[in-house]
Image (cartoon, rainbow, N blue to C red; front, top):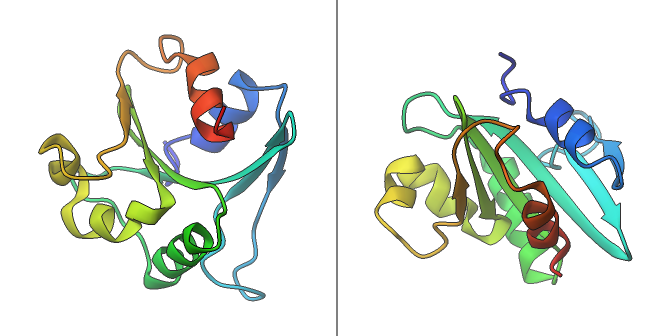
Amino acid sequence: MSTDGGLRKTFRSRLPQVHWTTIETGIVERGVPDMHGTWKGSSFWIENKRARGLEISLRPAQIGWLVRNARSGGKAFVAVRKKDVLWIFRGQDARMLAREGLAGAGAGLPGAGWQWAGGPGQWPWPAILRILAGQ
């Protein structure tokens, strides 16, 4: 499985009604999330991660981008996959996620986000889209 847990491909295939753009900025601007989506007038960003144990690897530039985006009123999320479980966290909670990982999410810390089990076929894609789009 890829370093993003296959989430980029999964989001694209499960939410085809979204206009997706894959972002690979690396040298141009560090920290920009992997994907940008637009749906029904809403715009949002997703940083995709695969959990290794309970740790989530977010680089300082990614945390900074996500937090600055939230401060300016943007919508960004960190989607984390561990086997057949999907978590979605608000970008503003990136510091907590990097520090506490999934152990913090399980402890019910602020920003614990949303969680679904059962693999992509069981994840509630219409509800996920409403969360991402803020609707």
